[in-house]
Image (cartoon, rainbow, N blue to C red):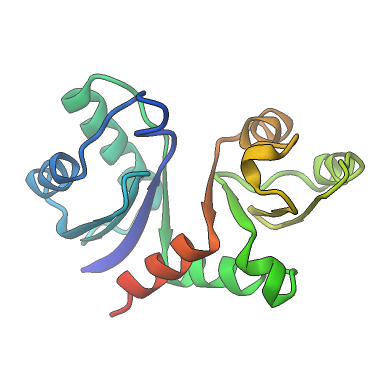
Amino acid sequence: MKTYIALLKGINVGGHKKVPMIDLRNLLEKEGFQNVQTYIQSGNVILQTSESNKLEIEEYISKAIQSHFGFEVSVMVKTRTELLNIFEKSPFNEEKKKASYFMMLHDEPKAEVVREALQKVYEGEEYHIINDCIYYFHDKGLGKAKFNVNFFERKFQTFATARNYNTMLKLLSLSED
C-alpha cells in the first residue's frame, strides 16, 4: 500500500459543494481506499491504495464524489515526497514562507507562458513559479490579493488548488509512514 495526499478543489467554500468529511471518509473507504484521514473541511485527504497511477486515483475519487454528492470536484493527488519537495522548494525566507500559499497546478505550465505570467505584478504581492507550484505571498493575505487561483488557472489552462503553510505542514505530518 502506498500513501497519497488527495487535494480536492473548492469544496465547503461559501456554502457551495458541501462535503461532510465523515461522509467523504466513509465513501472513500467504501470505494476501497484504506487508512483514510481528512484534515479540516477544505478537502485534504490522506489515504492508502495499491493503485500506483495518480491520474486513475484522481479520476476514481472524482467519479465517486460525483456519484455520491451529485457535483463535480477537481482532485489532485500527490505523494508525500512530491508534497515535501514543493514545500522545501519555497523561495521565500522563513517569515514570508509561513505567511505564503502554495498554489499547486495539476499540470506544469509551459516555460513561455510562465515567462509571460511573471511580467504581471501588483503592489504587495509576490510570487514565484517553480515547476507545478506557484509560491504566493501577499502582505495583506490571500483574501485581499488581486491575483487568485482563477487567474493562474486561466493563464496556464490547468486547475490549481491552494494550501497555506500550516496546512502543508499538517499534511506532511499526517502522511508520514
